[in-house]
Length: 326
Image (cartoon, rainbow, N blue to C red):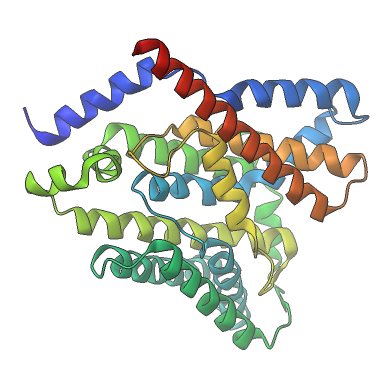
């Protein structure tokens, strides 16, 4: 039996045995409470608005799941998304078409992701330190390129595409669903996905089996950068401009969604659908708090408290299960 076949088998078994994490029940309860307790929440227009609001977060949180599954961390994605948005807007302003501009933004994202992965995988540097450094680099470059100002996009095609629909689904939501589907396929149905779990679960054994774990680890970070580059289309489409501070802080929501969804920072344990539910929970919570007039700073506090509550509940539950099995 090959290494990847055995790993895929273990992953399928783990998914069948996985109990529903606390975030599922928290999300159901939150949506029910908002639907009945917040005026206007359950309207079709507001539900579509939630989908539009979380579309970029989905694109950032999907690869973040793979990064954390492999015992990594990427603090640079928010600043990188802002930089990619600036590059996209500047490229359009230089007369390039949308495809060329998006390719340039994606190339910048992949380059920073590759740098992150190389420093973490080859030099063994802590991912927190590495990605904190590239966060500063990306943000600084974005500020230099724009002099701290927004780069307004004159090309109407960007806004038109952002407002378009695919089979009746708004384009940003369709893009987010596509990002989820591709990541799910990659994680659960390819050799690459099997190695992602194994790198986090038992990297030494995988290396002894002849797998080039460093190359896969670099690819994981490069994927995170790629998705940030592609998400620049949604960012610029929403704002009609490239703004150097536009996505600063989004890394917090992405990491929170992954943690809420049950992915562990160690042992290679995680659940991609859980991340999607985590994103939805954050989107619903922010939207409901906006509707009742809670300011954004308190929304961050609320999300942080929710993360702590879910982590504590899951930790207690795991301890009780382990005690019962002992």
